Image (tube, rainbow, N blue to C red):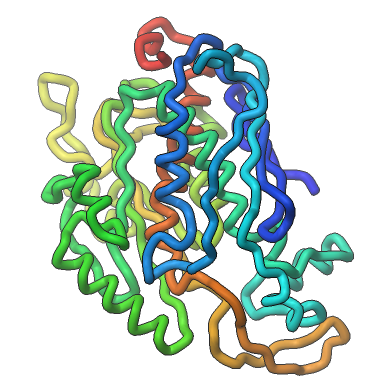
Length: 361
């Protein structure tokens, strides 16, 4: 299987399965001499971990990261950083009933047809549990580019949408982390949580939208023609399980405007009066806030009987068992932030320009 490495100069390769012994990775290309706060890494993992509220899976994993190499006296040595996170609460028996059955809208069918074998226990390598490794790498990247502020939050669950500009919201960590759905508007947070609980009680799942805002990115980040900043951000987001769409700046709304309405006019301070470009022009950052939205589908495993096929092509009926997220949105927030950090750090290292040296600590 190829495709297990992300990044160019700051690279992370991940391994492990949802119900295997452990998950882990190798971070290669990390600058030497970076002072790391391991508790900050663990904090990000705690934001992603299962069992943290009633609206996520109740799988009870501590998700404690163990660093094996590349760090000495709390500083990076410049050598590969190896890490591992052991699975403690996997219940593989919950998946025996799908050993020879393909779950609708899952990777079961495609994995078996491509590789001739699949790990049916929790989806194996296709499980979103793999994203735990991205959060480890991303949290380290965050500490290196600490002048850059990356804020993701849930802006929609099903038909409940927080139709406010991020500029009109309190995006403080305290507010976003104060509720289990990670929405900065507490009124809408309550409505979203209630909707998820209602859907969960029916044995069903629901999707939604995550908005991300990136502040303090200097002018000049991004490499035309095939490595545009928004293209790399899109690739990073679409690599996350359940993500079905990506738009930045005005996105699809911009198609309804004329050029005179859509153009971001310059002011004397080299800033623009509006920011429909989403902080990126020609694939390069322009110094304005970068913002984008991603759409996440409902989780495929539901606790309702569904029609499907088995390995022999026979029509059968199956129903999900075990512990699953009724909505992935709240746990996906730290994953989104981590992937953004990985993209940006890779760009900063690639540019190697003196004016960015203060950003890479």
